[in-house]
Length: 361
Ligand SMILES: NC(=O)c1ccc[n+]([C@@H]2O[C@H](COP(=O)([O-])OP(=O)(O)OC[C@H]3O[C@@H](n4cnc5c(N)ncnc54)[C@H](O)[C@@H]3O)[C@@H](O)[C@H]2O)c1
Ligand SMILES: [Zn+2]
Image 1: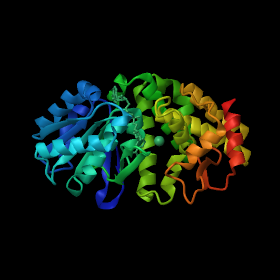
Image 2: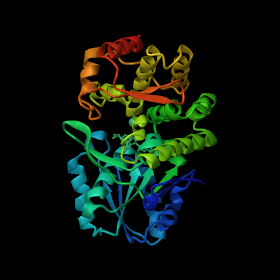
Image 3: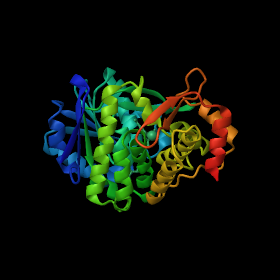
């Protein structure tokens, strides 16, 4: 079993990564808590596949488990569902010293984490992510949030989990599109932080999309390790952590213009990375060959990265409405070659427009 530590002083926590470890969840949880009561948050789909195994594992170690199910879907990551979780917590006698566990993808993780962060001013929280996106990204780092009708993730907090349990077997029931979409975030880590990891992905792309176990575990491990290193240096995103937004400025605009239905988050990120690479190329930070390598890797991973045919001015307005805008200037994380980055707000609208038009072809 591979394990990693997110080093945050007395709030440090471990990430366990292995196949078939859901059955050991009780023992792993026991190591980090003296809680007796657990509120398990999931959705009906994930719960129907993994709920029984998870609850049995917890009960076998003496935990008293109650359940809160949210409906499946991003649109339910909202205040009403958060309040339903709180209602269930009250009804089940969840106390300040109890524990909340999220079993599911990023939506369940974000909502359960948000509820845990506000319930009695914050109770302990554990992530058991079951999508690739959640395993390589959203379950690590402590960002928890819900959507507001005027914007995605507008209400939230930093509430670090006490433990992350990643069972790679759960990915075997995930549909293809969800799996490849998660690879968008994986490629991001290679481009912005680790050239060697990028080369590893190039060499193992076929194995990855066939869910070959060793490549899968190495990929998840390195992704979580990179995220942990960054979060340990900049927990609250005051600097370095912003590099994890590579492709997200364009990507969030694409998601919004697709009404959060047309594209999965990771797909939009891949499209955004393609546009960011083109911008980098135009300002001399990336060679044609490097740009082609990124494009080829997305193809090998079967991740559609061609920018959709939205009007550039609509993309730019959607970007300006993003919550990451500072003083009305659009901030970009741009690749510097492969494995490094720059952060700049010195990009003109004309340059953005040209980049969009170029990557739509
Ligand atoms: N907190 C963060 O740092 C962070 C980072 C990135 C993304 N996010 C958030 O994550 C969310 C997206 O997460 P996601 O991509 O995991 O989507 P998701 O949680 O909606 O899961 C996708 C689908 O897969 C299903 N599913 C989950 N696990 C399964 C399994 N093992 N087998 C079969 N089906 C399974 C879910 O029920 C759902 O229908 C967004 O709300 C985004 O804002 C948060
Ligand atoms: Zn993302």
